[in-house]
Image (cartoon, rainbow, N blue to C red; front, top):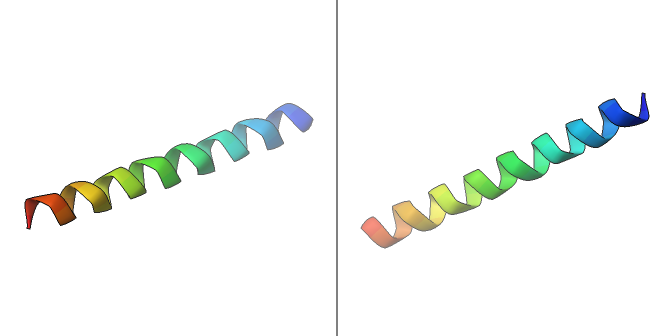
Length: 30
């Protein structure tokens, strides 16, 4: 169960990072 929670947390962090990079890219392209 702990491993699942850790992997879930990693997925959330990864998605947040990708989202942040996407927003930065869009801002720079405008």
